[in-house]
Image 1 (spheres, rainbow, N blue to C red):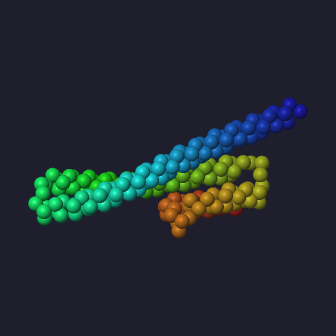
Image 2: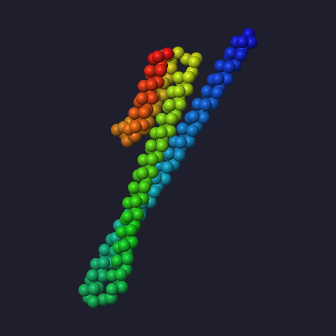
Length: 190
């Protein structure tokens, strides 16, 4: 009787530890996803700010063009070059603002791409951990293990983070596919 109790206790303890490990993995993946979402949000805000700066630069260029036209008319009439100097300064400021807007847009796109890659990497690690945990379970038969592994795989595929035609990293997509193939081979061998 004591042996059965010890066996049940050990199994319960092992299952509890596996559940804790799974909870930790899930929370890490969720935290990584939250960080990726925050990065993407900041990137969108930076892009919006850059667009506003570009719009403002266009307004400044328009003002500068009008001022240049006025300066040209004034020069034709023989007026001072004070207005012309102001126009040149405005043109330079508008050019610089436009360049800064382009740089900010490029940085925003890069940050968004990095955020998407980090999110995909976190999902990959999470799926990998789930499949490893599933393969280490001993109280499950081959058919059920394959079924649960397929559920995990399909759930990850639905996110479209591993689809090469949807902007996913090709290397990560290939690693994901090969990881699932290895899991299927492991299930079929046992």
